[in-house]
Length: 197
Image 1: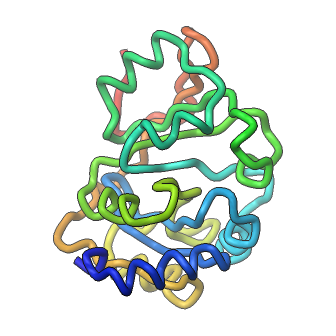
Image 2: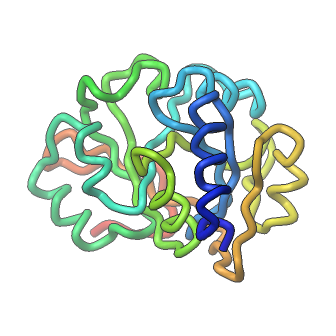
């Protein structure tokens, strides 16, 4: 994998700090992402997708431990869901902490977090400084989300710094389930791969 090349990893992190956006496979659909504390990178995502500024990005990582500082608190029921479905195709929305920039969440007081179940995405997060990416799907607004490397290249290839290969770790092609978890009353906002009981 390209992430095993130390020189490349150094170059990648330097470019991310300058506001670069990258595209990658996850377990659901292909995504684009940047460093969550980099306003230029976030702005680049909104511009390349022609995305409505009122739609927030979500934070993803290889481990929930890296995501916890971005949320204020996790209700007990949400803890159980995370144990069951992280890593996996579930995005949970919590009240955000002060660490989460307003420009990532469209100035909302909540933030969505997810830990995808994909080896290539996991490896990417392991080498990225901070291990967290602010993300959304790899498509222009109105397009279907990319479900293959070729589709990601076609959709966003000319707009991002890198489109990383999937090394055979393909995505399922179906979006994650999104649920609001501000308290123990879990509310599903988008039904996706994971069915909550």
